[in-house]
Image (tube, rainbow over all chains, first blue to last red; front, side, top):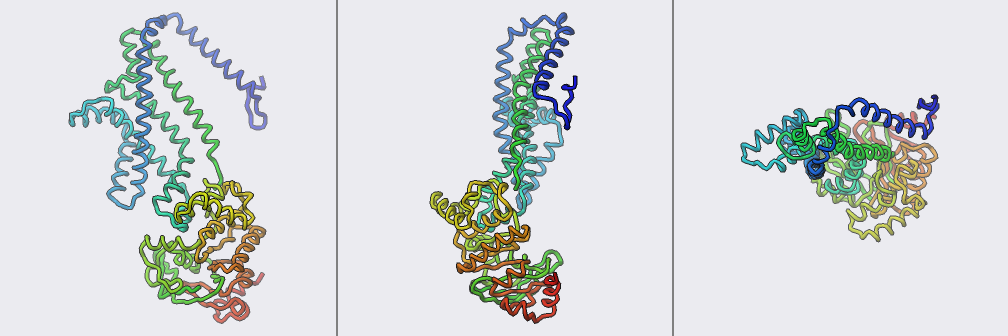
Length: 256
Length: 243
């Protein structure tokens, strides 16, 4: 059984890792089947609602994609504003980033929709929900990008000024390309969080994936069968991103 | 070329790095600035490069006073080439693209013309084999030579070099000094901050000793090293030439 131990001085072979992973998957599946199969028989009923799941899943993907673009815009704007010399702009960015990061998303969704949007007579759940999610995620992206910009050394600004680039050109040709390479892994991770966080939009009645699972649950009275696919559907989206992030992290390291 | 300082003061906090400096130097090829660390050499070079502004006083280059606005200083910086101690190059761009960037974006050359000129300069510095490499794959000496190539490709009025070899080992230092010596023979005016006394003695027309917030002495290289007049210069030279 020596091959089950992966040590620095004696790494286990690749086949051992594959065998272990497949064996464990089979083992845990069998265990779950043995424990739950007798009491859970409502798969057919839930299968009847597959269209609801699919529509919810599609909406989750759509919300996440739009929110990704919007939150990147908010994040870049807030990161640049936070570095701006004009104080009102800088303080506005700090206020935005710190308050949003300091409260739970659940609060933002409830307060933003039932509190603010309702007061403004704006009752379109979907755009309000996407906006709230984007503002939330944007605050985190702002910090990722700001730390990325700050990690580009002083010498790069000096060199850019010395060759006569304007500040806008410096950002475009010198700073952002380096920031992008460095922040792509954390940004990809933020995108995975965004997909998961979109589940909270279910509480304001947006029919995304989690909301769909809740509906299927209340229609079929089969909680396990309704919620297990919910988790699987999220994993199908987030696992590839997480693997991609890992490979990005290995690739971005370069000497400057 | 000619540089002139009139009552130039530059302070960082309460530390007056340059204190009411007035100075005039006219030279054909190379002006070397030497002196102890923290004596104001690099500060002086950054002022001459238009990267910083003096707190008071005027700097004249070839009889023209540098203006104070960032806009006009940027136009001035576009006419000269500045090379720092290290980390001059943009790490995400190849050696060639480092040279091409200012040619295209600042000086308005077409991409093809800029690439041709970049290859020309890199060829002259025996760097053409490394043109497609990013700086991370180059040696320290190669990086500095690419940085000099980038500064030179814009056909600057003069070059400003701030301790271009101080981050290099002796072999690479020689490699970079060879390039500077060659530029000298081609008539490229150079202002150089350096710790390489041998090089200053051999290649500089004028040597200025910068210490304690001012320029203590400025003389032709021969007389500067063989016959220093101020006690500070004598003490400094004794100390560094001891070994």
